[in-house]
Image 1 (cartoon, helix red, strand yellow):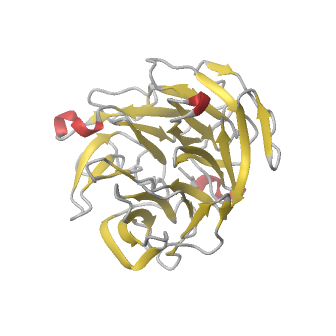
Image 2: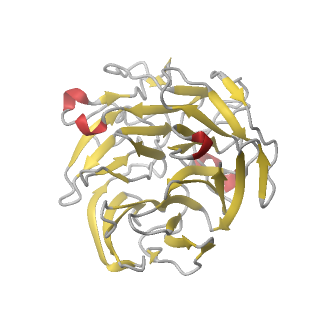
Image 3: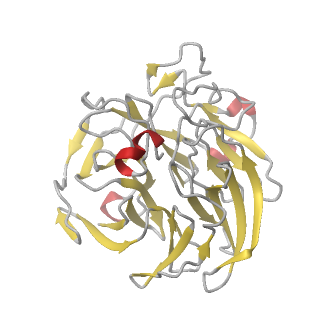
Length: 369
């Protein structure tokens, strides 16, 4: 999601950006809009965006059963515990020696097992390859670094498009979205090639690292959210469109004929892209928006499970700083704009049923509603 092409401008960013002049292709309903957000909070209508903490380059958050704490991930290789409205400066996990938090690399994702006793992390190792690993978690929330076990390592041919998220199914299997390996335009033509794990959604068995492909045709699905057997994916576009897709009935996907095909790089959103690529049963995005005023790099994304936004999928754009929601129960939902002018939002995440917007500049906001 973070794109190496904008490193000289913003140190790290979320997506492939090549043009920013067109109008949005999606119908946008603007309500409860904030044109500016103060350092602390701003209120409009039923929503409040409150600054709750700061952390060096936060990229993810997770929570575990029976624990009131929220665990925030810093891209340079640490995890920090947030409880009683305070973020501990002392990390509960430090793997900075195992990764390099530069470009689109680093510690990128965190999830907990269903019993909360195991943490799963997604990071790029010193060679730049995607590494999925597990660790034990003590009762006090401190990770047992000495128990770290590598589950699988996936080669990355380029430095960007590493995706980075990780979620756990009720069955205990791990879901990992993979980018197309990087560079631009899917140069290795891997996203639609089932012999490669790149550009796919993988279901990984944490016991032995074996995996099944659940979906193909993705460019860089930086953030995903699993809610009620539907996986929501915010896929960063190439040079024209950003898109939100959904993988339905996740637990029922068990074999290759059921693999969903999101189209990249035969398609960018609904536009034909690489004409030498063929999408089998192309599944169009739930929504897409064109590069322009609405932005140029999507920062997904989580479903609200309480409050006035309940059952809506919330996402942002790194370039425009806008935060929207869409209904999750509509065939062609409208994008509703809630906040505008945020500084470099990298992700919208849900933890302990709370919604947070993370910023590259270090700010952690909570959406209160």
